[in-house]
Image (cartoon, rainbow, N blue to C red):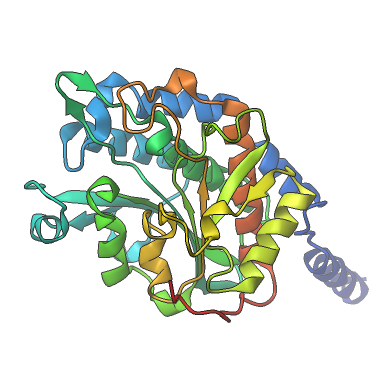
Amino acid sequence: MKKTILPLLFAIVATSCATVNYTYEGKAFRKSAESITQEDLKRNLYVIASDEMEGRETGSEGQKKAGRYMIAQYQKMGVSYPAPLKSFYQTVPASFMQTKTRGGNLPESENILAYIEGSEKPEELIVISAHYDHVGVQNGQVYNGADDDGSGTVAVMEIAEALQKAKKSGHGPKRSVLFLHVTGEEHGLIGSDYYAKNPVFPLANTVANLNIDMIGRCDPDNCGKDYVYVIGSEMLSTDLKKINEAANNKTVKLELNYKYDDPNDKMRLYYRSDHYNFAKNNVPVAFYFDGIHADYHKPTDDADKIDYEALQKRTQLVFATAWELANRQDRIVVDGKNTR
């Protein structure tokens, strides 16, 4: 009996492993995507963008307090940090901050990194990023930065939780995923520049960077629409744009607006968020953005003005794109050049 049962059991296990469904129609993806909720996004954003965080000025105690809250959430999820760091923090020295700043005398600060190791190709990496700093307190008014970039910060956290839920159910990402919260964006993309110069994992192994900077509001041209601006997704890899569009078509079905991909774009947004420090190192990028609204860089950018349904859908789009990038058989091809 043992000689017949053991091969049979092995065959059942092997068949089960071979038929794990990573498609968008599969249970693993659907359950994970559905775990990204408006309630969770709102709960975290009301903390990150509260007056208690004092506008999260780079290197300030308010920013550090926000960072400690984020780390506590990762610990509750069961998501740890990259082993080479020995903690969630990548210190950005004051000397680096001061040589890169657009002005002022910035103190030492920290990037915050969380990490899920891949099950099959752990050496290959997807980076999902957002900056968690803002502009602090000015003239006695707190600039809470709920959209800029509290929205991106909580989106990255929700994506991490969704992937961790998939991992716990036996459907974790095949490639590793790094959740990168960078400091100093408001002073000149400093934290992402430091990471690119001091990567925890080789940039050559980094498949793509999905960067989220303001996805909770609408701009005057698009209010009332289900949309998101996607910037730079085909600059370095036509695969990345196709994957993002397919993910969108099979899930949230947003209107993808490529206005800012125009080489003549006067706002030059391709250069103005943290993805660019990956792009200039030949890592394919996609930057998700909602546009410039009336409360941009004003003390009125508060959590009660966020469109949480839009924030949820945009977060789910980034998650769906990351899911495909992490689980597809072949890494995407770099077939373009960062010529802009």
